[in-house]
Length: 300
Image 1 (cartoon, helix red, strand yellow):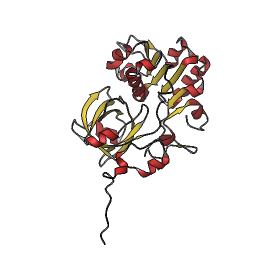
Image 2 (image 1 turned 90 degrees about the horizontal axis):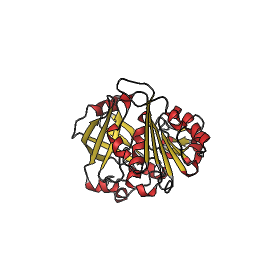
Image 3 (image 1 turned 180 degrees about the horizontal axis):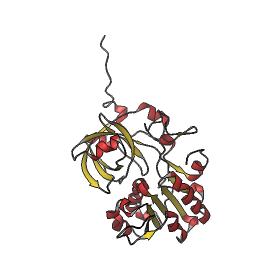
Image 4 (image 1 turned 60 degrees about the vertical axis):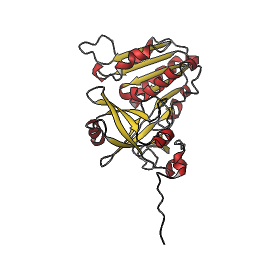
């Protein structure tokens, strides 16, 4: 008797957009999309921005994501890693990923050339509730590499500008050499009714900007707290201080959203490495409101 082997890449059920926020769906799909590196931009000594193009047109039409979600990026023979999507949702057939050289897989990627083939799974995780913020002012705060997932909401707002009120972008780095996407700041400044403030903890030769902690940018920032949502991305230790200052200003915790990427490994809630209590960061997060995070022991 001949056994028919099912080709998961041709299964009709996989040619629809799955709900990656449901654990049941996550357990049923493990599809890998083939993508090709079409552009590489060196942002700093340690970070590069990769543009990836889908090889198959039907897969490009199926793949959709929202600001704050991530993908599992696979380098055949070396492994896979979770990477935040740092791109516009308006582009079909391509995505952008900002990758810091920090290990074996990322080291291989940093040596990759245009034309190299890799694989992605996803998108996974929760997203920033951009619809809920409609008609409100939005305060976007990034620390260090936190500007990478924050780039998604910034591009979303720029493409749906009439749906939001005032926009504030606060960006803090340790040294000026670590600033990412500085070539886009002028473009972001052109966003109607948008204020951008950048601060560095250390002052370097040639740096004429502000010096101090990112919380210093909040001290004199005037905003209508009754009409403002806050999005905070960066190292978890930053959340305590930034969100505490936001609370003092009067922004409730359920209107603050953070990106909590905690030891994520598989992206599907299978390996349990990202668990905080009974919560899977990769499935129930990475985007969570701060009230939820405060009630998760050892989340930050």
